[in-house]
Structures are given as C-alpha cells and as structure tokens.
Length: 143
Image (cartoon, rainbow, N blue to C red; front, side, top):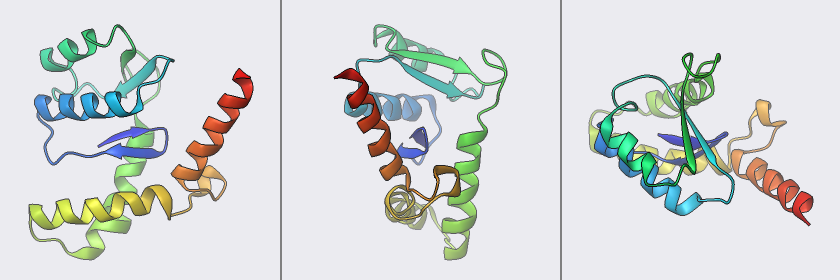
C-alpha cells in the first residue's frame, strides 16, 4: 500500500520489488508535484533494493527515500496504524477466504477509508477532505 499523509493512493497484492516499483511509478505519475516527495519506508528488502533505487534515480531526485529509524529517528508508525485499521475494521470482519476476495474487498474498502470514514486524528475529517484543505492552504500561500 502506498499512502500520502493519511490518504491511501494505491495498493498492490504483492510486496515484490517489482510490485513496489510499479506502485511508486503509478503514484508518482498521478501525483507528481513541483515539490520534492519524501518516501518513508522500513528497511525491508521490498523497499531497499536495486529495482527501487533505479526507479528513484529516474525521478531527478523528486523522490527522497528515507529509511525509518535509520535516516530519520521516528518510525513508519502512521502507515502501520493505517494497516491496523484496514485489517481490523475492514478486512477481518468480512471473513475473507482467498486472495480474490481480499483484492475485491480492498477495492471497496480503500475508497471508504479515504472518503467516508472520519478520523479523530484529522479532527473528524476524512483523508480526502483533509487533502483538499491542505491543497487549499498551499494554493492560498502561493498567490
């Protein structure tokens, strides 16, 4: 899964380096900004490998890759908290029995998480509303 702040951008049913690279490429092409992007991951082999490094080198340093608890003192707890919410509040109650059901459930649950489910950490907003507020503030500061 790939997130921007609290907003889930996309997910993949594999954690192979190639799958992670595809997630990054898709998210980068859709959400590329003028400002550099910081990618915070753990040091797992799916995140730290030649495939990922080769892709990152093609972005003209638009994406800075930081390893949690190595390059920065804090952890990737935000995405781990997100994983816990998706797992316990969305997936486990559905009693999924196979990968196809999981993929279909995520395709339905991710938009719900992003646009319907309010979050206390976002002052009762959804990630989508919070993203709109953030963009509005950024645009107001530019003009």
